[in-house]
Length: 436
Ligand code: PLP
Image 1 (cartoon, rainbow, N blue to C red):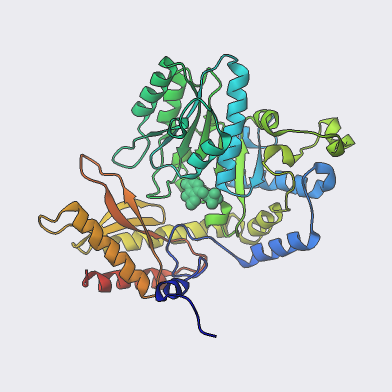
Image 2: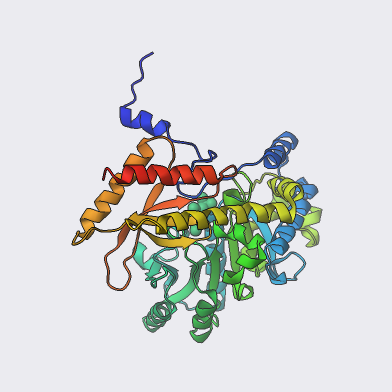
């Protein structure tokens, strides 16, 4: 049978898939032997964990796994099930986690401020688009335009949210009778891996009326959260005990397959107030006793799979040592790549964070910004057209008055990625760079 695919479509199919060691696009999605077994067991048991009573094991193991993972990641006790007000839950994705946090925030702020004005959320220009989607779905107010639901705050020369501009935006909104209710800080932005300064943001929130009015700070660490298993990489978590929620994806960089998002909150009651709807047919003695967790009240859907088994298998198999080694290996590979790039004067590293390196060809003498962006875009196309590696790009904001820059992102993180793959990727970039 003749294929009706265009050559462009068929060349796309030739690109390496997400688990291939030469996949450096977006963020690689991990897989591992133990997690496949956990996934198979979950499928085989066919458990429906919507209520504690439909599968006490599903609920209890999930509670333990989130506590284990939280301890392994250096989270404070406020986020564990052993605290009176906090706890963790497995969500499907970071996007769902953001939506859940936002509706919990909406509920809390409305309850505390009965005469509130239109609700407004804040995140940096570098925050993931999932936050925009959450604001649209939560329809936080019908009085404002879609853009005004969420105010995007400009970033500094390290692509971090500018706390001074956040403070100004919150003050402006309060003065206009609006109700600031939600801030999303990012630890490890998608474009460049930037870490917002949590302590500076907390200071702004405590100085303004935001905290007093019950405003909610969510921390999105979807990709970089995995690195917190390494004690030496935890500095960005400084002050996290003041956040209302934090979520990250073991399904990105912690040897766990999609889907698995670890969501922690210090205020589980806000989730229950926002998401608990109990028709007669869901009532049962265990739930009525108030002494068990029904995770259906912590998430958007009712039904849920036994995803905690995946975390259990991964943590028991690799242990703290194995998981740390996995992260450190990729960070060390990114160190090497950064050195190779810096050794070639035609290139520059525009941003580096953990295992993510953003680079570009430098402009030639007198070259216009549009031209250098075009050459870098062409370079990316040529590298991907080899079919021997796969990269994606982003555009980073200009700093110090310079224009925005098109950069190639090299996200190291595949389960089986080794130095030879990173070296081959860099060699392809070098070879193709002479043609653009
Ligand atoms: N937040 C950040 C910082 C991300 O990098 C991503 C995805 O790459 C997301 C959120 C969305 O993740 P998910 O696909 O789990 O919704």
